[in-house]
Image (cartoon, rainbow, N blue to C red; front, side, top):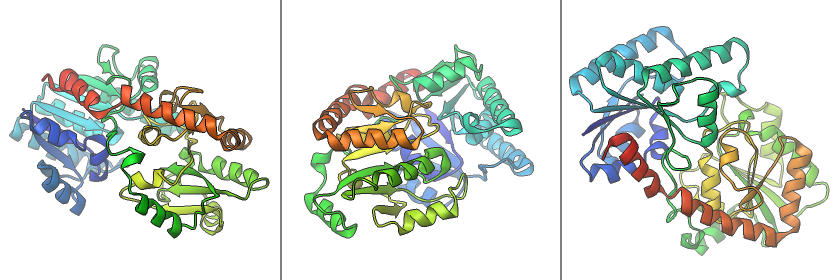
Length: 378
Protein backbone atom coordinates (compact mmCIF):
# COMPACT_ATOMS: atom_id res chain seq x y z
CA UNK A 1 0.00 0.00 0.00
CA UNK A 2 1.35 3.43 -1.00
CA UNK A 3 0.31 6.34 1.24
CA UNK A 4 1.13 10.02 0.69
CA UNK A 5 0.90 12.49 3.58
CA UNK A 6 0.63 16.18 2.65
CA UNK A 7 1.68 18.86 5.18
CA UNK A 8 3.05 22.37 4.79
CA UNK A 9 6.13 22.03 7.06
CA UNK A 10 8.00 18.94 8.23
CA UNK A 11 8.17 19.95 11.91
CA UNK A 12 4.59 18.72 12.41
CA UNK A 13 5.43 15.18 11.24
CA UNK A 14 6.72 13.83 14.60
CA UNK A 15 3.47 15.01 16.24
CA UNK A 16 0.96 14.07 13.54
CA UNK A 17 2.52 10.74 12.53
CA UNK A 18 5.77 9.97 14.37
CA UNK A 19 6.13 6.31 15.27
CA UNK A 20 3.22 5.45 12.95
CA UNK A 21 5.80 5.44 10.17
CA UNK A 22 7.56 2.48 11.79
CA UNK A 23 4.42 0.71 12.99
CA UNK A 24 2.61 0.61 9.65
CA UNK A 25 5.74 0.19 7.54
CA UNK A 26 6.10 -3.16 9.29
CA UNK A 27 2.57 -3.97 8.10
CA UNK A 28 3.40 -3.32 4.45
CA UNK A 29 2.63 0.40 4.08
CA UNK A 30 5.08 2.44 1.99
CA UNK A 31 5.08 6.09 3.05
CA UNK A 32 5.67 9.29 1.10
CA UNK A 33 5.51 12.87 2.41
CA UNK A 34 4.95 16.06 0.38
CA UNK A 35 5.83 19.36 2.06
CA UNK A 36 8.21 22.30 1.97
CA UNK A 37 11.76 21.08 1.49
CA UNK A 38 14.15 21.52 4.42
CA UNK A 39 17.11 19.92 6.13
CA UNK A 40 14.68 18.66 8.80
CA UNK A 41 12.52 16.94 6.16
CA UNK A 42 15.51 15.17 4.62
CA UNK A 43 16.89 14.08 8.01
CA UNK A 44 13.51 12.88 9.24
CA UNK A 45 12.85 10.96 6.00
CA UNK A 46 16.12 9.08 6.50
CA UNK A 47 15.24 8.35 10.11
CA UNK A 48 11.70 7.14 9.40
CA UNK A 49 12.39 5.61 5.96
CA UNK A 50 9.77 7.51 3.97
CA UNK A 51 10.23 9.13 0.57
CA UNK A 52 10.21 12.93 0.73
CA UNK A 53 8.86 15.14 -2.04
CA UNK A 54 9.75 18.80 -1.59
CA UNK A 55 7.02 21.18 -2.71
CA UNK A 56 6.29 24.78 -1.75
CA UNK A 57 3.05 24.60 0.25
CA UNK A 58 2.81 27.97 1.97
CA UNK A 59 0.90 28.56 5.19
CA UNK A 60 -0.61 31.79 3.90
CA UNK A 61 -2.68 32.20 0.72
CA UNK A 62 -0.56 32.96 -2.35
CA UNK A 63 -2.55 32.42 -5.55
CA UNK A 64 0.35 31.79 -7.94
CA UNK A 65 2.32 29.57 -5.53
CA UNK A 66 -0.82 27.64 -4.57
CA UNK A 67 -1.77 26.96 -8.21
CA UNK A 68 1.79 25.83 -8.88
CA UNK A 69 1.70 23.54 -5.83
CA UNK A 70 -1.59 21.97 -6.95
CA UNK A 71 -0.21 21.41 -10.46
CA UNK A 72 3.05 19.81 -9.28
CA UNK A 73 1.37 17.69 -6.63
CA UNK A 74 -1.32 16.46 -9.04
CA UNK A 75 1.40 15.42 -11.48
CA UNK A 76 3.29 13.61 -8.69
CA UNK A 77 0.21 11.77 -7.43
CA UNK A 78 -0.69 10.64 -10.95
CA UNK A 79 2.84 9.35 -11.54
CA UNK A 80 3.07 7.44 -8.23
CA UNK A 81 -0.54 6.10 -8.21
CA UNK A 82 -1.05 6.32 -4.45
CA UNK A 83 -3.69 4.21 -2.71
CA UNK A 84 -4.37 6.99 -0.20
CA UNK A 85 -3.60 10.68 0.00
CA UNK A 86 -3.79 11.99 3.58
CA UNK A 87 -3.74 15.79 4.03
CA UNK A 88 -3.27 17.82 7.21
CA UNK A 89 -4.01 21.40 8.38
CA UNK A 90 -6.23 23.83 6.45
CA UNK A 91 -3.63 24.76 3.81
CA UNK A 92 -2.08 21.33 3.40
CA UNK A 93 -5.57 19.88 3.39
CA UNK A 94 -6.76 22.23 0.65
CA UNK A 95 -3.76 21.68 -1.65
CA UNK A 96 -3.63 17.95 -0.96
CA UNK A 97 -7.31 17.17 -1.49
CA UNK A 98 -7.56 19.29 -4.67
CA UNK A 99 -4.50 17.56 -6.14
CA UNK A 100 -5.69 14.09 -5.13
CA UNK A 101 -9.13 14.79 -6.60
CA UNK A 102 -7.66 16.03 -9.89
CA UNK A 103 -5.32 13.03 -10.02
CA UNK A 104 -8.26 10.65 -9.59
CA UNK A 105 -7.21 9.19 -6.23
CA UNK A 106 -10.23 7.38 -4.77
CA UNK A 107 -9.25 7.61 -1.10
CA UNK A 108 -8.73 11.23 -0.03
CA UNK A 109 -8.39 11.68 3.75
CA UNK A 110 -8.39 15.05 5.50
CA UNK A 111 -7.31 15.42 9.14
CA UNK A 112 -9.20 18.34 10.67
CA UNK A 113 -6.70 19.29 13.39
CA UNK A 114 -8.68 22.29 14.57
CA UNK A 115 -11.09 25.05 13.58
CA UNK A 116 -9.04 28.10 12.61
CA UNK A 117 -12.01 30.37 11.90
CA UNK A 118 -13.19 30.16 15.53
CA UNK A 119 -10.94 33.03 16.55
CA UNK A 120 -11.18 34.97 13.27
CA UNK A 121 -13.66 37.67 12.31
CA UNK A 122 -15.23 39.26 9.26
CA UNK A 123 -14.01 38.40 5.77
CA UNK A 124 -11.12 36.27 7.03
CA UNK A 125 -13.55 34.08 8.97
CA UNK A 126 -15.70 33.60 5.85
CA UNK A 127 -12.66 32.65 3.77
CA UNK A 128 -11.40 30.12 6.34
CA UNK A 129 -14.84 28.55 6.70
CA UNK A 130 -15.19 28.30 2.91
CA UNK A 131 -11.79 26.59 2.70
CA UNK A 132 -12.86 24.04 5.34
CA UNK A 133 -16.11 23.31 3.51
CA UNK A 134 -14.41 22.95 0.13
CA UNK A 135 -11.75 20.63 1.56
CA UNK A 136 -14.48 18.62 3.33
CA UNK A 137 -16.41 18.40 0.05
CA UNK A 138 -13.41 16.99 -1.86
CA UNK A 139 -12.29 14.58 0.89
CA UNK A 140 -13.79 11.09 1.05
CA UNK A 141 -13.19 10.89 4.83
CA UNK A 142 -12.61 13.65 7.39
CA UNK A 143 -10.86 12.71 10.62
CA UNK A 144 -11.87 15.11 13.42
CA UNK A 145 -9.27 15.07 16.17
CA UNK A 146 -11.69 15.67 19.06
CA UNK A 147 -15.40 15.29 19.86
CA UNK A 148 -15.81 19.08 19.93
CA UNK A 149 -14.18 19.46 16.49
CA UNK A 150 -16.52 16.72 15.26
CA UNK A 151 -19.48 18.62 16.73
CA UNK A 152 -18.49 21.85 14.96
CA UNK A 153 -17.96 19.94 11.71
CA UNK A 154 -21.58 18.76 11.94
CA UNK A 155 -23.11 22.04 13.11
CA UNK A 156 -21.25 24.26 10.62
CA UNK A 157 -21.75 21.77 7.76
CA UNK A 158 -18.01 21.63 7.08
CA UNK A 159 -18.36 18.16 5.57
CA UNK A 160 -21.13 15.59 5.23
CA UNK A 161 -21.75 13.83 8.56
CA UNK A 162 -21.27 10.46 6.85
CA UNK A 163 -17.67 11.46 6.02
CA UNK A 164 -16.74 12.59 9.53
CA UNK A 165 -15.07 10.19 11.93
CA UNK A 166 -13.06 10.25 15.15
CA UNK A 167 -10.29 7.94 16.38
CA UNK A 168 -11.42 6.44 19.68
CA UNK A 169 -11.94 9.51 21.95
CA UNK A 170 -9.75 11.79 19.86
CA UNK A 171 -6.21 12.91 18.88
CA UNK A 172 -4.46 12.12 15.61
CA UNK A 173 -1.60 10.02 16.97
CA UNK A 174 -2.24 9.20 20.63
CA UNK A 175 0.29 9.42 23.46
CA UNK A 176 3.43 7.38 24.05
CA UNK A 177 2.76 6.55 27.69
CA UNK A 178 6.16 4.89 28.07
CA UNK A 179 7.92 8.10 27.07
CA UNK A 180 5.65 10.38 29.09
CA UNK A 181 6.16 8.58 32.39
CA UNK A 182 7.72 10.53 35.25
CA UNK A 183 9.27 7.34 36.63
CA UNK A 184 11.48 7.04 33.55
CA UNK A 185 13.07 10.47 33.77
CA UNK A 186 16.53 10.59 35.34
CA UNK A 187 16.65 12.19 38.79
CA UNK A 188 20.04 13.69 37.94
CA UNK A 189 18.59 15.33 34.81
CA UNK A 190 15.74 16.84 36.84
CA UNK A 191 18.21 18.10 39.44
CA UNK A 192 20.41 19.65 36.74
CA UNK A 193 17.41 21.47 35.22
CA UNK A 194 16.26 22.74 38.61
CA UNK A 195 19.74 24.10 39.24
CA UNK A 196 19.91 25.64 35.76
CA UNK A 197 16.67 27.56 36.27
CA UNK A 198 17.22 28.28 40.00
CA UNK A 199 14.17 26.31 41.10
CA UNK A 200 14.62 25.68 44.80
CA UNK A 201 13.01 22.76 46.67
CA UNK A 202 10.46 25.02 48.40
CA UNK A 203 9.15 26.48 45.13
CA UNK A 204 5.92 25.36 43.44
CA UNK A 205 6.07 25.42 39.65
CA UNK A 206 3.13 26.14 37.35
CA UNK A 207 3.98 25.03 33.81
CA UNK A 208 2.85 25.83 30.27
CA UNK A 209 3.99 24.11 27.06
CA UNK A 210 3.28 25.61 23.64
CA UNK A 211 3.69 28.67 21.44
CA UNK A 212 3.60 31.95 23.37
CA UNK A 213 0.87 33.65 21.33
CA UNK A 214 -2.46 35.37 21.98
CA UNK A 215 -4.57 32.33 21.06
CA UNK A 216 -2.93 30.34 23.86
CA UNK A 217 -4.20 32.79 26.50
CA UNK A 218 -0.73 34.03 27.45
CA UNK A 219 -1.99 37.57 28.16
CA UNK A 220 -4.58 36.29 30.63
CA UNK A 221 -2.09 33.89 32.21
CA UNK A 222 0.44 36.66 32.87
CA UNK A 223 -2.27 38.89 34.34
CA UNK A 224 -3.25 36.04 36.66
CA UNK A 225 0.41 35.56 37.55
CA UNK A 226 0.71 39.16 38.62
CA UNK A 227 -2.24 38.63 40.98
CA UNK A 228 -0.68 35.48 42.47
CA UNK A 229 2.66 37.18 43.13
CA UNK A 230 0.93 39.63 45.49
CA UNK A 231 0.33 36.84 48.01
CA UNK A 232 2.85 34.11 47.21
CA UNK A 233 6.57 34.53 46.52
CA UNK A 234 7.46 30.83 46.48
CA UNK A 235 6.01 30.14 43.05
CA UNK A 236 7.49 30.02 39.57
CA UNK A 237 5.93 30.11 36.11
CA UNK A 238 7.69 27.85 33.60
CA UNK A 239 6.91 28.72 29.98
CA UNK A 240 8.21 26.07 27.58
CA UNK A 241 7.91 27.24 23.99
CA UNK A 242 8.85 30.00 21.54
CA UNK A 243 7.52 33.47 20.85
CA UNK A 244 6.07 33.68 17.32
CA UNK A 245 5.40 36.54 14.91
CA UNK A 246 2.04 35.12 13.86
CA UNK A 247 -0.61 36.06 16.46
CA UNK A 248 2.23 37.50 18.54
CA UNK A 249 1.84 38.91 22.02
CA UNK A 250 2.94 42.52 22.54
CA UNK A 251 6.58 43.51 22.84
CA UNK A 252 5.82 44.88 26.33
CA UNK A 253 4.48 41.49 27.45
CA UNK A 254 7.45 39.66 25.94
CA UNK A 255 9.82 41.91 27.88
CA UNK A 256 7.88 41.31 31.09
CA UNK A 257 8.21 37.54 30.59
CA UNK A 258 11.93 37.79 29.87
CA UNK A 259 12.72 40.13 32.77
CA UNK A 260 10.54 38.83 35.61
CA UNK A 261 12.55 36.70 38.10
CA UNK A 262 9.59 34.41 38.91
CA UNK A 263 9.13 33.48 35.21
CA UNK A 264 11.37 31.06 33.31
CA UNK A 265 11.10 31.11 29.52
CA UNK A 266 12.97 28.27 27.82
CA UNK A 267 12.24 28.99 24.16
CA UNK A 268 11.85 26.06 21.75
CA UNK A 269 12.76 22.71 23.34
CA UNK A 270 13.25 19.49 21.37
CA UNK A 271 12.57 17.07 24.22
CA UNK A 272 10.02 18.50 26.61
CA UNK A 273 9.57 15.31 28.68
CA UNK A 274 11.89 16.22 31.60
CA UNK A 275 10.39 19.72 31.81
CA UNK A 276 7.06 18.24 32.92
CA UNK A 277 8.95 16.79 35.90
CA UNK A 278 9.77 20.33 37.04
CA UNK A 279 6.07 21.22 37.24
CA UNK A 280 3.56 20.83 40.07
CA UNK A 281 0.58 22.10 38.04
CA UNK A 282 0.03 22.27 34.28
CA UNK A 283 -2.02 25.02 32.64
CA UNK A 284 -3.27 25.62 29.10
CA UNK A 285 -5.53 28.73 28.99
CA UNK A 286 -6.18 28.37 25.25
CA UNK A 287 -8.86 30.05 23.14
CA UNK A 288 -9.05 27.08 20.75
CA UNK A 289 -7.36 23.77 20.01
CA UNK A 290 -7.95 20.74 17.84
CA UNK A 291 -6.99 18.37 20.61
CA UNK A 292 -4.31 19.70 22.99
CA UNK A 293 -1.75 16.90 23.04
CA UNK A 294 0.26 18.77 25.68
CA UNK A 295 -2.60 18.30 28.15
CA UNK A 296 -2.51 14.54 27.61
CA UNK A 297 1.28 14.55 27.94
CA UNK A 298 1.00 16.43 31.24
CA UNK A 299 -1.70 14.06 32.50
CA UNK A 300 0.43 11.08 31.48
CA UNK A 301 3.18 12.63 33.64
CA UNK A 302 0.66 12.69 36.54
CA UNK A 303 0.17 16.44 36.64
CA UNK A 304 -3.15 18.08 37.57
CA UNK A 305 -4.38 20.18 34.64
CA UNK A 306 -6.08 23.56 34.37
CA UNK A 307 -7.56 24.33 30.97
CA UNK A 308 -10.50 26.09 29.33
CA UNK A 309 -13.81 24.80 28.00
CA UNK A 310 -12.83 25.86 24.48
CA UNK A 311 -12.90 23.51 21.48
CA UNK A 312 -10.53 20.58 21.98
CA UNK A 313 -9.58 21.59 25.52
CA UNK A 314 -12.94 20.52 26.93
CA UNK A 315 -12.27 16.96 25.70
CA UNK A 316 -8.81 16.70 27.26
CA UNK A 317 -9.72 16.41 30.97
CA UNK A 318 -12.41 14.90 33.14
CA UNK A 319 -13.66 17.84 35.21
CA UNK A 320 -12.83 17.58 38.92
CA UNK A 321 -11.18 14.19 38.34
CA UNK A 322 -8.09 14.84 36.21
CA UNK A 323 -8.18 18.62 36.30
CA UNK A 324 -10.34 21.74 36.52
CA UNK A 325 -11.75 24.11 33.93
CA UNK A 326 -10.83 27.78 34.05
CA UNK A 327 -12.55 30.81 32.60
CA UNK A 328 -10.38 32.93 30.31
CA UNK A 329 -10.22 35.61 32.93
CA UNK A 330 -7.25 36.41 35.24
CA UNK A 331 -9.19 36.24 38.52
CA UNK A 332 -10.52 32.74 37.84
CA UNK A 333 -7.16 31.50 36.54
CA UNK A 334 -5.46 32.77 39.71
CA UNK A 335 -8.19 31.28 41.91
CA UNK A 336 -7.90 27.77 40.35
CA UNK A 337 -4.09 27.80 40.53
CA UNK A 338 -4.39 28.76 44.19
CA UNK A 339 -6.84 25.89 44.78
CA UNK A 340 -4.17 23.38 43.76
CA UNK A 341 -1.40 25.23 45.60
CA UNK A 342 -3.40 25.13 48.82
CA UNK A 343 -4.55 21.52 48.43
CA UNK A 344 -1.59 19.34 47.35
CA UNK A 345 -3.61 16.18 48.02
CA UNK A 346 -6.25 17.24 45.50
CA UNK A 347 -3.51 18.00 42.96
CA UNK A 348 -1.97 14.57 43.58
CA UNK A 349 -5.29 12.73 43.10
CA UNK A 350 -6.08 14.57 39.87
CA UNK A 351 -2.61 13.83 38.53
CA UNK A 352 -2.92 10.11 39.28
CA UNK A 353 -6.36 9.88 37.68
CA UNK A 354 -5.02 11.83 34.69
CA UNK A 355 -2.47 9.11 34.01
CA UNK A 356 -5.23 6.48 34.13
CA UNK A 357 -7.42 8.57 31.79
CA UNK A 358 -4.66 8.72 29.18
CA UNK A 359 -3.79 5.02 29.47
CA UNK A 360 -7.42 3.99 29.01
CA UNK A 361 -8.31 6.26 26.09
CA UNK A 362 -5.28 7.73 24.30
CA UNK A 363 -2.44 5.22 24.39
CA UNK A 364 -0.93 5.48 20.92
CA UNK A 365 -1.40 1.87 19.81
CA UNK A 366 -5.14 2.17 20.45
CA UNK A 367 -5.22 5.17 18.12
CA UNK A 368 -3.04 3.40 15.54
CA UNK A 369 -5.37 0.40 15.55
CA UNK A 370 -8.24 2.79 14.78
CA UNK A 371 -6.19 4.28 11.93
CA UNK A 372 -5.50 0.80 10.61
CA UNK A 373 -9.21 -0.11 10.60
CA UNK A 374 -10.90 3.17 9.66
CA UNK A 375 -8.37 4.70 7.27
CA UNK A 376 -5.92 2.13 5.96
CA UNK A 377 -8.35 -0.79 5.88
CA UNK A 378 -5.85 -3.20 7.43
